[in-house]
Image 1 (spheres, rainbow, N blue to C red):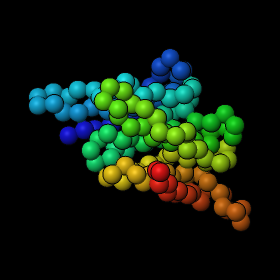
Image 2 (cartoon, helix red, strand yellow):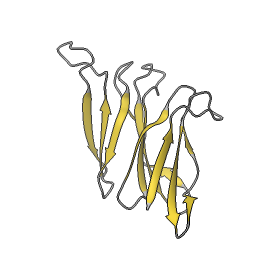
Image 3 (cartoon, rainbow, N blue to C red):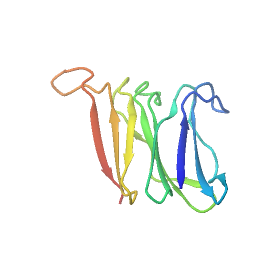
Length: 141
């Protein structure tokens, strides 16, 4: 059994409320952390707001709803694969398009880890409707 635990308000070397995520695997009689603690990129990111694991526990997607300097607080998600000793990011950050999108509010990953879904609650529409939200689906290639 493997679990991912996000702590969006964690303070670390990247600043207050940068956030973090840790992944643990149950090993016979105790929980053992897999790899390093994954942390937000800057203060206020809220990295770990949402987390999801693939079925085998070797891929994780982590949302950071306030990540983004430009556009400010667009939010994003990052995807990692466990390489046996450490977590390695796959591709770049998958970010929101406009300030305040809160992209990464929700995340999901398929059992095989090849498809992810990322939601943003404050995304507007092309016709000008505000805060209608969005879910985007991506396939890893």
